[in-house]
Amino acid sequence: MRIVMISAEYPPMAGGVGDYTRRLNAMLTHQGHEVAVITGPQGQAYRDAARIYPVRIPVWNGAGLAMIRQTIDKLQPEIVHIQYQTGAYQMKVAINTLPSALKRERKKGLRVVTTAHDLLPPYLFPKAGMLRDWYTKRVIRDADGAILTNAGDYHTVMTESRVPWNPRTVFIPIGANVTPAPPAHFDREIWRNKFDIQKQDLLLAYFGLLTHTKGLENILAAMEQLPPTTRLVLIGGIGERVEDQAYANSIRQLIAQKGLQERVVMTGHTDPSEVSGYLIAADAVLLPFTDGYSYRRGSLITALAHGVPVITTHAPANIHQDPLPDLIDGKEVLLVAPDNTEQLVAAVLRLHQDPALSHTLARNGQALTDVFSWERIVAQHESFYDAIR
Image (cartoon, rainbow, N blue to C red; front, side, top):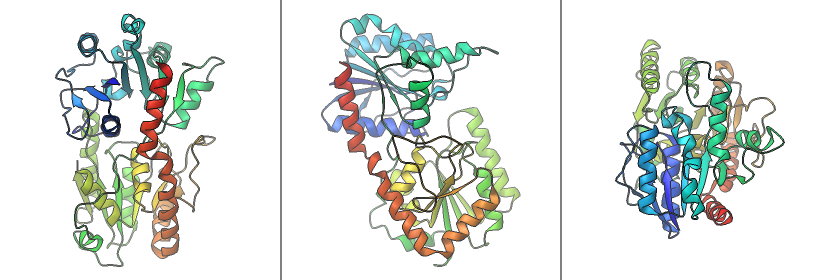
């Protein structure tokens, strides 16, 4: 099957959607499909995944849309698959109109799929209101089929009104951004020695982009209250947006203001094997999302897959993860309230004082990630492509 994958975010750009798309492309290519990627100027080709088509989109506006259509005419794919995340497309609405813009090609057999990684509305002009929501729905409604990656968005699309946004909507979760595969000859104790800690000392980790919804301020506040021998490694790069760069700088300043320079290491964008090494070396992974945990967070799935105890935040009230299982406090993870430093500190100390609990969380959390296997995800995609053709 010939597939054109459109993703504004793609490695080496930092970001979960780009990492997800690369992994999906690699699996589809391994299954024998021909996959070409249309992305932004920073995206690069990788031998383990699809080829980057020479046309890269500098700005995701009407001119960029024309470039996409020209490329589709040249490649003649059977599937055009849009990986949609509002912010990645510079908050512009052109990509939202692509499914309807391809009406002529779809009459000849082309099928368009939209995977929505979030349902945030794009920017139009001040007080655009309902028009912004209309464009958000359009990229899903006008496609031949839609994929939702988390329970909250899936239920919104399917139940907001009597008529779903798109009747051909399915739920397919994302997988781990990084699978457990540390560097060759990895030794956990040697790796921990990089942080100048003793065997009984705590090594904590955070994994993901440095963005304002990840609870990083809360982690640093907790570090002030934890024993001074505790070390923290912030694993992850910085987004391309100006606000992401500014936020990362504010975190660096906060580390200095709190006098944590000797206790906190920021890795920046890191090779997947290095990420895996850091996670396996850690005693716990802290993911205190300010908006509660969700399986749309590849960092959460990655941490669970590595068999490391995870401390994260309660999901918002009345939000359940079905058709996936809810995380159970004390069984797969420890759950704390968002922006609650005291609860976060107490959870870290609880794990430190109860090795049996740490082992239970690590084992159960890792077992839970069977539903996020890439083999299952790619099989679900293939079935969906066949169903809409």
